[in-house]
Length: 116
Image (tube, rainbow, N blue to C red):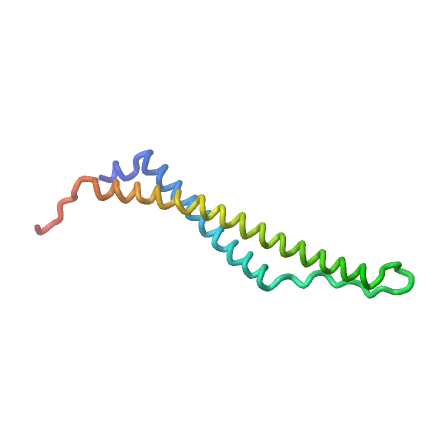
């Protein structure tokens, strides 16, 4: 039984499960972080108040602030999409390989118990 448990095939299955489980954890953390970034965005960098020598008007500063907010929103959405894609790939791979391991353990030879 111990020899069957540590066959090359089982080692492969356990390694794939470990890697995909780590990917799932990273994807879930990324999804939570991306959701927080989308709901509570970064306020952006403080912009200097225009003075007469800068040549920048209030409209320029407002446009720059809006650009920063749009950029942060876009990054948060791209992060959510990337993490959702990772979860959609790694989750089923993990489930498939883990089921293979469980099937092999249930189909294996029965171990006699003492006292029966």
